[in-house]
Figure 1 (spheres, rainbow, N blue to C red):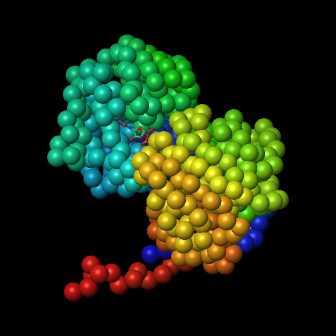
Figure 2 (cartoon, rainbow, N blue to C red):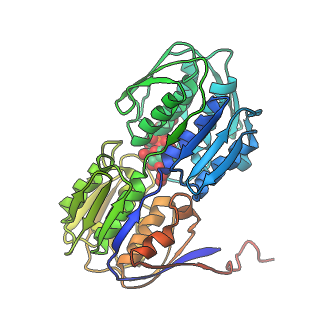
Figure 3 (cartoon, rainbow, N blue to C red):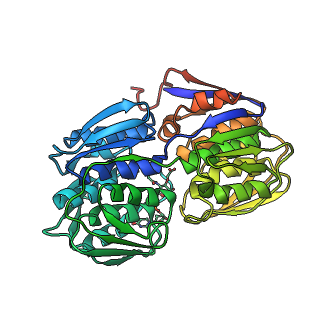
Length: 430
Ligand code: EPZ
């Protein structure tokens, strides 16, 4: 078992380079199997465990995957020979369900175990299924455990999503890229990684328009070819460093970013009193006083991202005044507040609302990473707090943040990864 040990209280200062976007990579990697060719993908966060799982799964179905350098992979999809993905491959990773769309697109058949991933509340896949069915697939779910989708032919059709879903939008794009005729997704998700997936598929010869708006038109093509493509920078990793800079009252230049993707985060930080300077591919965040309060409501893009909600709550926990955070995407994304209470925060949660009464300082404590972004919030809290914070269950953090110790360490954060012996659990006792 590993944990992070943080000695907090130092402002973060210096420069940090953001990795490629996890959620774009998780859609683009399975998309590569829609070609019978070789795709070279750059700016891939290869050392996060979610990407390792994706690569393992690709190999399992017969793809060749070569690591060209730390952030470039080559996927050879010529010999992909299986449409079956077992529970072993999907249990840790939500995005494993993108193989349903990709395999359906390639083989007109997919048999994929239900996905695992961070628990943020119920995560239904009804909109994915609705999309596959609209394209002519027959979809069954066996024992609540395996999704089987088959189609004689995939035929383009209009699909209206009842909820704005990133996953369903991605999965339908994957299945529709090689369908016959035109698929129109209405009420589609508009996140930067949706646009990135469309650009990747178009580089492979697909015909997709409108990504980034709520109507995406996909004119199916018969074949896709290999390409070289570079993934966009990670909006949420960048946002995490932005909030960490502000919460520790530091001054950080964050490199390899797209400022447009960070607008909702920047504007909330400015509201809290941070200074922000934007450059072409960099953003500088500094804060030299106690943050002010602000209210946040998470929304699909271009609204404030739910994946930044826990990190931002740490800043608000230190703010002057009372802030209200309203979570509108996930029904169970405030579990981390219990950990912040241990550090001296004053937060009350009522359903989808958290009321945060800012305190002057947080103090280090033993805490847990409940999920990926909750874990990022614990790092920020530990760095901003006085004294020692120990974070357990860091495997969640390793799912989505590359070289996190090195990156925060280079900014002057005192954070170490330590190995510890697993406690003697009740389960193992006699
Ligand atoms: C993606 O999850 C991200 N994951 C999540 O990032 C992120 O929190 C989420 O989008 C929202 O931005 C990846 O990209 C791999 P959704 P996804 O489908 O696709 C409901 C992180 O920390 N819904 O957009 O699973 C659903 O319950 C993570 O990086 C249905 O009702 O999210 C939720 O309330 C965790 N039926 C809302 O839509 C469906 O069929 C949005 O979910 C699908 C979704």
